[in-house]
Length: 204
Image (cartoon, rainbow, N blue to C red; front, side):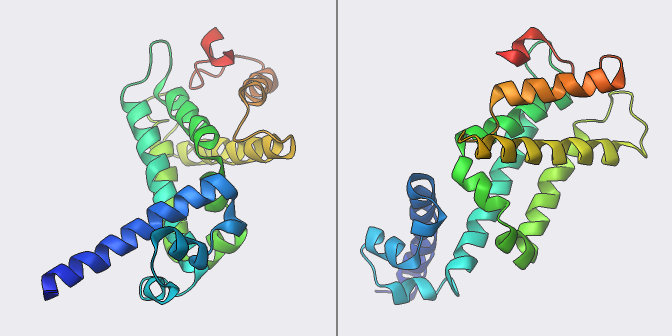
């Protein structure tokens, strides 16, 4: 094998390992996503994977980074082309909640305290995703100095709703929980919150 072919094979193994890890994660959860299980899935030795990943947590951290990048794409696409009747912020929020339902195991990994606290790259990836969410609030009549705080409040609310849904055995944020939380916020405010742009479609 030439040096070029060997480099391609090594790079391919890394990507194949990440794809296999994500499939195992979604099918069987974090506990079953071991380097040994991934190696068996790929038909390679565990030692080959240690060339790319120092340990299981290093691999899981990369999955989490990829997860935040995917979440960022979902929110950015939604905010840039919001469906009729939805604000950019509303659309980005729907994309966030939709991600939790379509990628429940990956979302749980992204907010695994051990992974998030132990890897700078994961924290940076979350910060990048939050920045896209924050930008979706621009142009909704909120003061420039307040946008980050408002976005953070809703970001934290999304995580809280995901936790509530999880305790009820529901993958991702259940739509009824999201709808009730948003209506509760408007009740506390005593008036509609324009940035939310709530409509009957949001309850569906």
